[in-house]
Image (cartoon, rainbow, N blue to C red; front, top):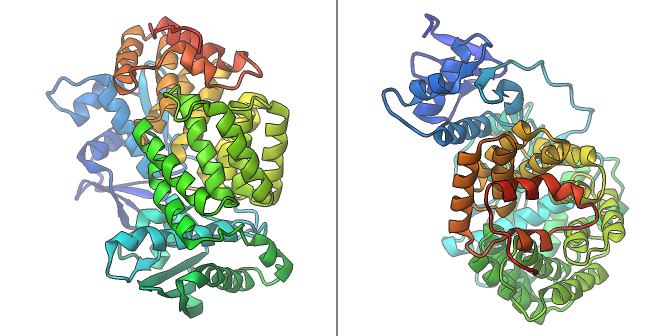
Length: 509
């Protein structure tokens, strides 16, 4: 360790007196091992530090597997945020080095807005999902406007349940405006309060209180959206506000079921996926025109198909397409619905041209929506430009620093690098994705295949065993059957790597 008490790089500083990392003066949680690794990288002065040296620094006198180092580096990158790739550079087969990136380019003039999770003032923790659902709808509505961008829900929701300083939040997320508020639900009465803060000055630009019945929740969301848009960008026409209103369910009970299903849907396990599908179907039974529920019910069936899980209905594919077409019929102006359906078109219907047309429409309606960007990356990965896939995925990560759904985009970038033949970079992105979500099937495919293509057969076989323990029924045949087939070369390096690592072939699916 050198004699300095503090060492800086970018907005970060190593506080050697406390063995802590800070960003703009605020502590960053990286743990003791993360700090030891970062300090070792910093002290190397930009030179590469070997894996053995790093493991000795973090686990002194202990024999550990290399995978532990990989997990710690991935967690450290996550803590550093969107510029982590520029700071911690992987040197394939050797180790890592620390590089200070150049200052980021100035934003092209569009202000950024963060909507923090609203406080649940109902005194009933079971109502948290309702407050969160209101915020998610406001984020979706605001993201429709091209004159500013909105930080993704999962990035702003890292502050849920925490007492925060708005200026610190603004610095960490890189935003100019912060919207915060509260929700109180008592019987059929609802009160929503909201306030918009200029993070540069800390001044309140607007604050209001909305009282009404639960049945008026969507009207309250619209009024909040209108107020924020009017302040952030006065030139936005009121016609655009009307256009931003999403297709609303005719039944509040359907909306409630939809909100309850979301956490099960994103959990990405066969049991959770089945439970989510059941909840979405119950919502659809109450409101057959509810496009978001229709699209995610189809999405649950697409998960079964693309992951190679057992079917939920007698004909998964036919029912998926039926639900998708209904979602498109009733949600033709909803960018999120269009984007989700674009992935179903290529995975389940194998209608590749229409899938590309649908994602282009979604991008035209809302180019700042995180779900749209994630889906654009996936669709282009299989049916369009690989470079564009990487671009959309990186854009999603940039707009959503710290987003827990970032593993979708990271796995897209990993797969893209498998296609391009850069297996070291593919492995790096897959490791980062796994640190965010250890249960995502495609991430495991990339981890296995990239290791095999790099000649790391022991690690590749270990990964196969780990994956089979999680999903026993998976075979190469089931993976191929669930993936788009427009260009078999897009999957060739992955399948070859899985085969090299010893994954079961399986029969026709």
